[in-house]
Image (cartoon, rainbow, N blue to C red; front, side):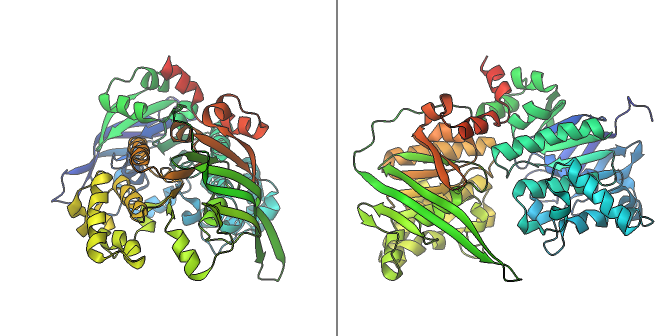
Length: 541
């Protein structure tokens, strides 16, 4: 095999869907190559076929539901579309490896991470000694820039941060130096600085390892930062491909243009001056998590440290920062899912920080939350209508009035009234998030706390949900605390920005001022880590 030949060559690959669906194929006549020391990015929305293509290459398709119905998948010249299960076991790990989107789910929670990396070596290289495997584990963990490799090798997955877990997954993929690495949305759940580190790591590793990378993503910022070639998929078909500069600056297909247009850019909204009297005022709020290990050692983590801010009616305050900065702890404390150590939360003048029992339950109707994952936050066994009327009925509204309110809310969020009789799994991700917004509004709250409410959505659906939030806020007038790690999204929807680092607010001010003239060095670091800023300027030109 010469160096000019691709590591992976897919020709006319088709994956059939079961009969009776609205389309016959998940993937249809897909062809592309992946070369050594290059990254090919496959971009598209949910349902485009990008992850199905990756699973087909690894031969991990659920064969009772999806089957390869045509084409070839040649890995270093060998057609693995027809390979036997025994041959596939030899190839997986040794010649091709996969990095999954959610490392906490992909890693074994009861095995130390060092042992999980060593297991790859033990299975595929049974002649190696335990000492050789441990030395290789330390080498790999150093390669992926994990600090203190010997200590972290003894840790369990839950003891690592999201970025560290993803580095462990990359180390496992590199263990046997495979020719092909498939990375399925490897940075979607990460904050901007960790995301930038992981993307930079991929580039650095390709200079050391003679591999090629097939990266699945819906983020054109990621494409701009790392891709050597881009493939755009829609409903199982490739609609456009080419160099990232060409695809980003001069897209030919309307679908590609629509995807790029939906990517959030730094834009700032103009809002009337907020009311003088805040709907909520937070004063010197502090929260400490106290944990006791299995061996009795006590550990304290300062999640919130003297946090103070105000929020006016109709205003949106963005809370941004890395994982572990205190964003979600703040959201939970405002809803009193956590009890603060000290400080005050003044809701319309009443301190709710110490409420309990019936008073606490009554307060919560005024502050409602929209969570990151709408599927997990809806009961899969209950119809949508039951979920929407539950809160109002518990707080004294008659069942008939609650149903009427739910019907009105479904129309308000752009869904049909008869959708109330359906179950969560019958909706798309964007539709489920609209339902969760309707559920929050059913209580007629003064404040909505949205915790990473659009981070799991495709860019086009994300744009729709952001427009929905703005439209509903204009109509109803609720205030909103919008927690996000995406600074561009925050600029689109937030009037003011609070930047959090290690439990403290290090910068607070109007969105445009914070992002264009940041005062804190940490804010400047976050802005520098935003993926694809160069492409944003290029597209704007």
